[in-house]
Image 1 (cartoon, rainbow, N blue to C red):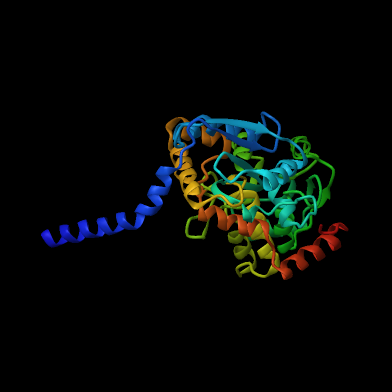
Image 2: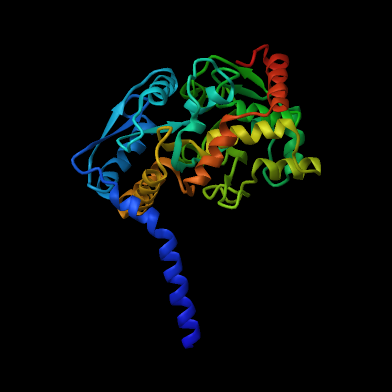
Length: 363
């Protein structure tokens, strides 16, 4: 017993000695008397703005020195304008951060020249995953919901009508997923996500995609509308799990393997995974500027863990992101790397796909 206690004490002392330098640095960092500016690349009242303001006050309470935390809305280009300015000008002293989102990551993934920033140079604090699913009017398409192979045959033969904005919008995740399965909807472009949803509700479209929270709010009790698959969530071990808000719905890889007899692979699947990381795992993400020291990053990670564990915030988060788990630090950075970069063979595949299927060039 004494030997065990001795080992515990020695081990604890050793761990403390190793941790002391970083702890000292964290203790030396204080934002007392300073103002922290939290950049949001959208107007007030949208999803990104709402989530930021849910966290804002509690972040002030959990940062050393309890600084004043203000939200600065800088709309333009789907957050590209704010991201460009943040990348170029944000000080790396802990007084500025940005709430990144899918719309700011996709231009980087697609190689658009409007994005003069590399989010991989930013320092990841927290990722807020938000579930996404593909759903349809079951009777119109012929979905039964109990037999994935039968549903697959129905999807291949149905007159699917899918409204979306452009071939390069966030719905590219759905386009690539269906292309892998040989499902070819009739796409109607030029519709915002709001307009596409309205057209779906009128029955003009019979397939749509949205975040899981919105799907459940609008159709959770509607027997005529059912999800085909969800995009799941990647756990801390890097494994894809089912969406916790749609536990009975297969993920896309589950659906693919069930109907084809083999697991998805190849450049199309690598593209699909990159888009999933950008759209689901990093629906929103708290980022510090490039060059931010590790001790400041660590302070912010611990602060955000405390913020998101606060009962008031924890009660509000499901209204914004559903029940998806959060990711922090290195886990967020890994999702960022996947969601913003493509290997050459993957880029070649998606360029060919866009040109052949939609007569659209990759940026």
